[in-house]
Length: 578
Ligand code: DON
Image 1 (cartoon, rainbow, N blue to C red):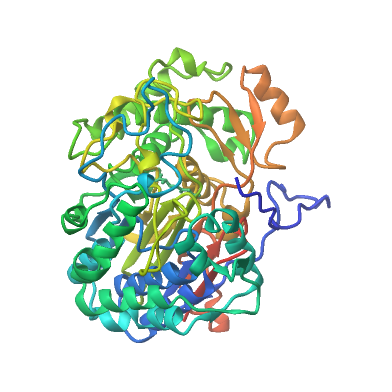
Image 2: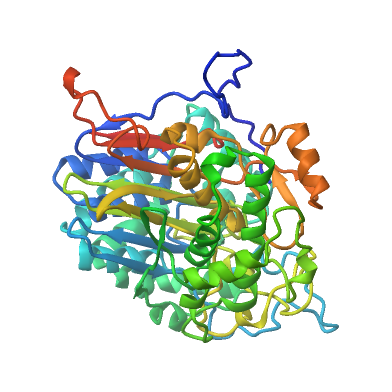
């Protein structure tokens, strides 16, 4: 994991009489009156705000942001990958666009195993054989044509200009790009773009991606056909074949984004709208929140031993259900409403002891899936109150670390999100169920959780994050921090996190997340503890005030409605609004 030790704010060691200091101080969230974008790259945020200012809606802005991120944040922004978009319109209607990658037609359940049945290291994470059929262009086009208000070309113009004319890299951009340098050097098509004559790009240099500019221009001119058919598709298929991959022109021509019904649930007085399968994100989030609703988290306090214990026990059960049951709903049958019902949560709570950790092994079934570490999330709201929560990914940072020559398109390694060998430990020693076995045309199970929260029928929060299997836990903790612990949005996002996911049977914690005596209490209950690096970059918007209780000071003329926070765990990203 990329270990970026970002500033989380100063932990106050001052004893303030009368105040309970539970988390680090954080600056107040920046506010805006009419619209807001929070994304992983400053130029993408700016492009989205510009669309909003020109009267485009949140979906229009999201499309502009997504295409700019594909240029300026190639770690995860993409047109060579896929993702999910949760939309809530100001009229209260919500929907979900699934543009997850699919397995090519020639994919087989055992394609990443050798003759002895062992999973071959790196086959599903590096190079052309690890690539799923990309969905981003189709997903953005489906969202735009159904819910946008603007033609395609103006929404793509900034991205095209940034690729064709380039942009000046800042230190964060350059440091991040350099992370892929060793792999880029192995792939001439990647080296041609992501290295500068064989060397990492440096801060202050102008980075031009001429091929990507032409590809985006083809999409701008011809929509889906500019990517999935014609010269770009031919180059993608040729690159796959030349690189030992299996994606054909027919796979590309056959790709379809799908509109689905989001997963919805209630937590205390809030309503949650999140990602349905083929993502597990919404199910894990709702199942966990339903269980936690039965515990007085606010009274227990932020990261008290008892609060962490109950959270871990809830997560243990929802990740177990995720891994045993979920998959692509077009291929496997399961009933998500069972997992997201209050009755089921009550059943689960009945099995949770307040004093003793439940050994994960006693909750039978196969275990946790490995997931990559590179994705990006952005949140958008417009003047009317339409909201978009979008998470998309190449899976690992820079995906498969191969580029389709002549297109500038960096490709995903999303095939690794399938279970390479159901029922057996994969190369990371983890195990997953047959529901997520590889099959032609199937979408691999995801954890992405682009989420929208409402309160009394009004928009309250837009939130999401990268982080693989740490996505639902990242979103969950920020929500609990805001709803139960009364934090401002920046406090909630900056606060240290824990993570638990059934297997491995461990509570992971960020540095300073748990005090020594809290850990001692947890160990006495039977928990194992391990420190972890940062996994998330939450991008969130809160409507109405810096926290649920605080309101902008109208007496001073403050008319801000939207408050944003970008996680400081990565040194990139920005909040923008007008
Ligand atoms: O779909 C998934 O769940 C993963 N491919 C996402 C990977 C990810 O978020 C890594 N981010 N840091």
